[in-house]
Length: 193
Image (tube, rainbow, N blue to C red; front, top):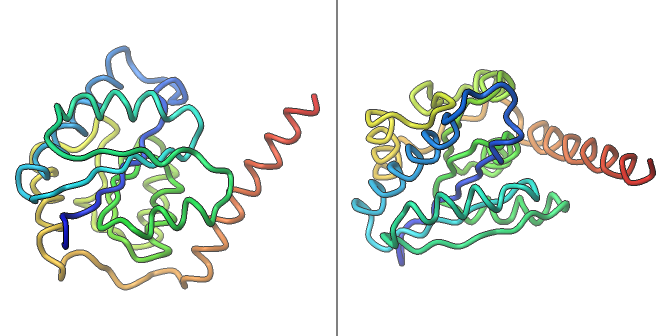
């Protein structure tokens, strides 16, 4: 990694996660920060880029960045409704930690290794459909210490980073584009009413 690895982190606003117990989001944020601090200790020059796949994701990204205590460089990719812009941001990453499903879909589409924080069945379903490493599907509370070690191992060993695609690339891209089109239609409808 010339200059250090670039880790994309796509977190979801905790207010958008229905049915979470009080304090669950704070525990998840602490676990994510712990994983990123571990990676920063192991990989010189680590850069964490928070990928905002929703306009409400900025605050959670800023909270987790604060928990990193300056141990690595951080930056923020603001939300864009243009899929190509977010796809390009994901494609520059060496690894993506995705709570946002679209971040996982885009990672898969451009063959960037990814781990998923499974806050909803759709995350699990996608990972199963594409044949993800089960060790890279984290509970909604974020990666455990053992999973953090596994994540570091994946980043350290290029042979462990890539799985053969279970879905044709064109299908994965179509899935991502269709999902953003659905969101755009919903937002357009909401603005009219």
